[in-house]
Every structure is written in C-alpha cells, then in structure tokens.
Image (cartoon, rainbow, N blue to C red; front, side, top):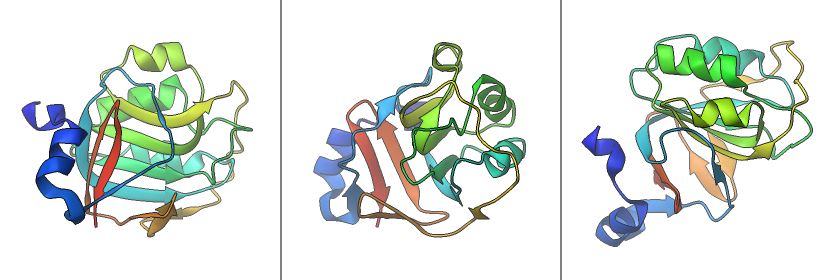
Length: 158
C-alpha cells in the first residue's frame, strides 16, 4: 500500500494550494496511521445506523468521512463496525465525533481519525444523509475527492 504511505507534509509541499488542510486536531486511532482514498460522506448526529450500513458495503479503498457535528456524547463507530469496514475493503474512516472500543480498533488494519472516544452507544434510527457535501472546520469534503490522512493531519482535494 505504497500510495497510503504518502506523508501529508510532503504532499502539501508538492501540491500546496490544490489541497485544503484540516486544522481541527483529530486523533489517529486506527491500526493504519497513513491512509488515503476517494471520499464518501455521511452526515449524522448521535446515530450510527448509516455508518454501520455503509461500512457493510464494498469500500473499494475509499475513506468514509462522517460529520457527527463534533459530538463526543455517543460513539459513531465501534470495533464491530470497524471490523466490517476492514472486511469490505475500506481504507479508512474520518469521524467528526467519537468512536468506542479504541484499543480493539487500534489493532485493526484500518485508518481511523476521530475527535475522541466514548463508550456510550449512539441511536440506531437511521437518521442522517449519505453522499452530501460536508464542511468540517471550514474544509469541504465532496464525494469522490481524494483525501490523505496521517499523524500530521488531514488533506483533501479542493
């Protein structure tokens, strides 16, 4: 996975203004610290049903970006959903919110960026939107745009 090992600092030096950098300090929580791929998006608030159903479909090396409005009150992904993402070929997940089971997720070959963790489960009603443009910390995430993540941060094509 040589493409996944791209350092964001080097990439930014090469491509600069073609890329947006997320200033919000996401934590690297998955087993893969460097990951990249085409963006797929979900907007949901304290409800992870869409996250679960999406990561149960073929990922084809994509990165799911989930805008949970920054809520740390409930987890939007746990170890079982993360294991499903691995089994279905997702490169990673970026969650503007919380995960749970962080020790188990750290052992999975999956890139995971999130704001933190909380053991509390989320609702499962299916509320939310799939394949919508998201704006997180002033950066727009569009379905199909490339994203690169590593311990330094997150870059996305403008």
